[in-house]
Length: 390
Image (cartoon, rainbow, N blue to C red; front, side, top):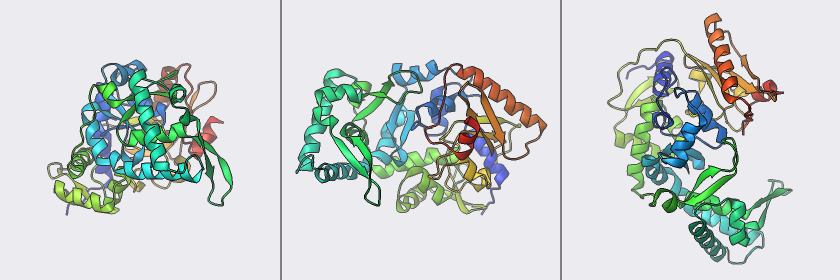
């Protein structure tokens, strides 16, 4: 069993994630990592800025909303991703629609337990159908606009803590739109406001793309997904694969066997590489990067010691969401934040040497200039981000 040491893992990360040589387009950036995280609307834009030559927000907006070469969908772990449109049906079949039955049952239970209707199944069927017809008629619409056509969207569901105390409510529009997304029937389109806005318009997939997403056999879709992921993120352990995909361990192991992945030795134990990707990878030239919160590189692995060290408590929140990060040669060495007046500030958690520090400061200045009047507040904030932005 070949040993893949930390230095080689960091070299693979740098090259495969587009962090050493600028990529040509947002599509290439998404392809290089299977997809780009989009739970925070700013993340996908900042992930592209970190990787794409001469990137502007209009480049990504064109790919998402004009030529539609990228699609924003629910994917792995039921979170938002921007993926190449030709690959969207694979992500949908491998990871998304498997959760649809549970989400429908859960929504039905919420309807009945909150007293909105005694027959939750019929209510959800009727309201979902009404929402689909409203979108078919409108083409695109926000949740607020859909509520004009589907009054049931205004219903509020109480939300309780584990101790039974009421913490607030959420609208049924949120729940039904999430359900329809999980079923692969609707997608988020252009938001209202700037590229940092999270108030999206919605459309039927068939309206937006001209056809529905093809449904393929789940095992085949999972093999296609994991093949691309292992090329970008391998070597990786079974725990890493389970974390990233949201699949069961049984599904992970079955897919690893289907791919005939090769075992290699990692500091964490047994890892896997694709059978045609086992040759050693040499380290590239020195590099630095400023990546946004929830960037796919930061969030790519469950076992993060080889690139994070003992700095997780400062750079990740309590739920495991990574904040804005500073990288040097494949190691996550600090964080950055944007203050209210627009200044991008950096704090390093270890000595990186004079040359790397100068390169980081230069990159921070470039990001500050690029952001201009835009102010970015991460959706999930790490302790270091909160400290820096204060």
